[in-house]
Each structure stands twice: as C-alpha cells, then as structure tokens.
Length: 250
Image (cartoon, rainbow, N blue to C red; front, side, top):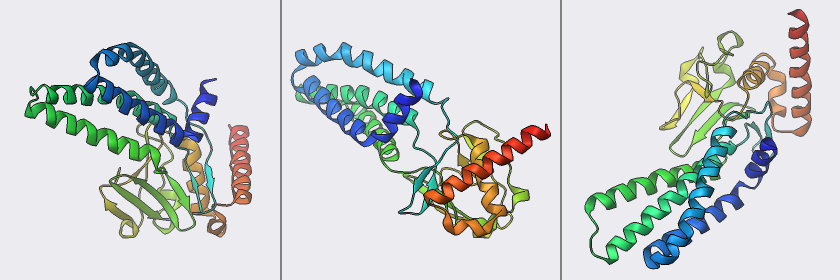
C-alpha cells in the first residue's frame, strides 16, 4: 500500500507540488489577512502536515532496485525519492504559516529584523528543496558515464575513470555509494556538488546501482545503448542472472 502510494506520488509529483503550493499560498493569505479563517484552517493543516512527515520517514526505507528509462536524454536514472516530496509538503505548510504571521505583524507594524531574516532563510531553504524535488536531479547512467546533480551543482564521472576493481559496492552510509577514481582528472565537478566522490542511494537499492555501474564498466560495448527500453530489459536480465549465480555459489 505504502509502496503504491509512493510510486503514484513520484509519478504525479508536479501536480502534488502545485497543489501543495496552492494550499500554502491560501494558508499564508488567510493567516496574514483574515486571522479568524486562518485559525479555522490551522488544525486540519497540522494533522495533514504530521501525516506527510510520517509518510516521509516511512518512505525513506523504500529503495527500489530499478531505474527510470529516459530515452530523450538518453539515460537510466534512479527514481525520484517519494520521501522528499512528502518532506517538501511537510515543511512548506508550516513555513506558509510563518509567512502569514509575518504579514500580520507587518500590518500591525510590530515586525522585527530577526523575523524577516528568519523568514527569508526558511523561504530560501524550502525553495531549494522544491526545486530539487521538481527537477530530475537523481543519479543518471549515460552512454559517456555517470552524472549526479542537485540545485547547486553537479558531478560527472566518465566510465574511463571507474575501473571495476576500484568501485566499492558497499555503502559506508545508507544514503551514499562511494567511488574510487583511477583517473581523478577526468571527473568534472560544477558549482557545489552534492558529494565529491559518492552517489546518492537514498532512493535506490545501493547494491543494484553498484551492480549496474560495475556492469557498464566491464562491458563498454553496451554503453551506447543506455537509455533504451531494450537495453534496460537486457540489463535487468543480466543482473538477475548474476545474482542467481552468486546465490547458488553461496
């Protein structure tokens, strides 16, 4: 049930986020301009906020062993994290209440500089989170290598920089997969990358991602087909056969 809800949320995340923004704008306006109506909406929004935050925590444990096929890029991308969509909604609505309170204080001429600074800091933080959720800023396997981006920067790793012997399939933390580079000069970092030598695995099974990377490092003849449905099906069959062989060996 939770998995289906997370999948539907990710699939329609743009609509979900737009509806969340609409509710946030209405909430801020009612608190700032019509406090009585704002108080009426307060408790329902508190309950909804708590619910989506709980869903965010639960969804963190759902990490599918699959990619999203992006033929127009072309790329195989890790799925957008459902937990981050829920988190965005969970922080968006309380932040809108703070902005509404700031508007009300401004109208009453009792606003302080600290209130404005804190409100702006929250707006910046929530905006970055919304941009990250809205865009496809996940790990992508492309014909030329691996690309990982987020709103403030990106990391691009050519396949030639990742010999199979240097890739560490384990994770030092559940949310990242570390890489060791044989040719660090080939690695490109722009802006402020999420990490200098690790890939996010907070939205995908780390062993699956490591196995797929290891496959294309060892089999360069298949890299040009990355991004096609045919190659994705072949990859899944190949990885499943390897897993079955490993299980029988154990």
